[in-house]
Image (cartoon, rainbow, N blue to C red; front, top):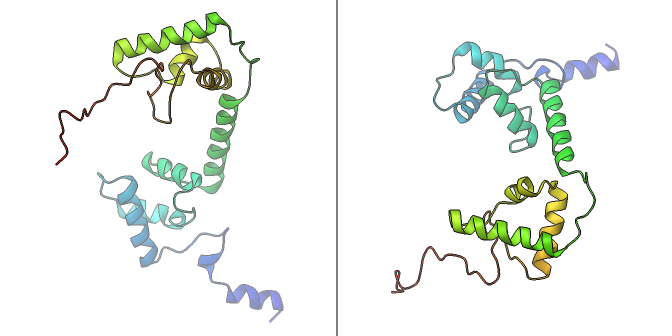
Length: 188
């Protein structure tokens, strides 16, 4: 027996990254648990379990690849590695396109300042929350980098204030609405 044959014989087929993994009862249990997690309202059929058996532990739990594989299983697709990798790459490229700087920085003019103040005030008057950055982006026609840049500069100059919470943008002269006023909930 050659050295290569000895190494190949010692390696179980289940650990082979390229070859199909056998559908043992342990893998079937894991596959059923996976299907119950991503499709809780459906009872998995034996044929679907066998179909997905080789993919059950291929991706690291919580990774972007696992999230894509879960979505594919929800859509009754087979999460083959090449397909998952291709979808991940497309999502990554789309994210990079959205985040790319497509325009020049916006000059902080009184007109820009007044436009943002008006958007913030109107949103507070209409919906009792601050505007989302995407709403400002749509109203002004700026890309996401330009919007972030101008809002950070307006915050630094004290024109607007916001934190990490969505809809938290307000004008410093405007106090955010306290949805849990202390007078209604006395401390005991």
